[in-house]
Amino acid sequence: VAELLLANRPDGELPLKGLNVLLTAGPTQEPLDPVRFLTNHSTGKMGYALAEQARDLGAQVTLVSGPVALEAPYGVDTIAVTTAQDMLDVVQSRFADADITIMAAAVGDFRPAEQSQDKIKKNGRSTIELELMSNPDILAWAGKHKRANQMLCGFAMETRDLETNAAKKLASKHCDMLVANNLRTPGAGFATDTNVVTVLTPNMGAERKSPIMEHWEKMGKDVLARRILNRLAAMRAESLYQ
Ligand code: C5P
Image (cartoon, rainbow, N blue to C red; front, side, top):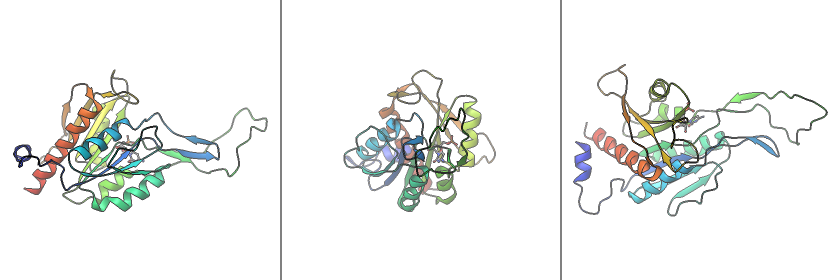
């Protein structure tokens, strides 16, 4: 129904017109000392593609980005952050206004328990122990605090048992959509311009049933971004008519 409603909008009216879209993208960096940090291979490409497409579909876009080599997209309110805690702080301050939130950032699960003020020296040691503590889960926070008409989408990168793990994430983080990609699939994952994903949505009216899973073909991250956004806009429109 909602896809039809959106398709039949008056000429020139874009599907995300008047909506606020909040995005996270890129990696986080967790400092160990003034010169070193823990991070991952995320380039931010998927999140930035989402930002550009959301803007082109008419949304007001806020992009909360970890350190990446990409240029801030034109017309997008881009907020640069470094750590998971910084990213959480910004998301918490913007979340209430967001109609659609998509978290494509590869947030570090752990950070060094202590941050040394000075560079850590070798001091003749052949091993060194590093204590890590867990970072806040930003997506889980958003899932806990979202209102009924706020759409929330997470990403998941798995190296095994993709469907089982993604289904668990969709439910435990209270997402309306979860986009899962397998790091081992050719054309998927970090630093590529394409992605191969399985899209999970809750099986409405069937509590405790497994989610609906769609295997989407390999496509460019920009095309994928547009499809994800169009689907979320349709789901949101449908939720308003219920
Ligand atoms: O549990 P996992 O890290 O695989 O979940 C991935 C999803 O959760 C992504 O959407 C990611 O942006 C989000 N996430 C987050 N904060 C974390 C860890 C993951 O927002 N600390």
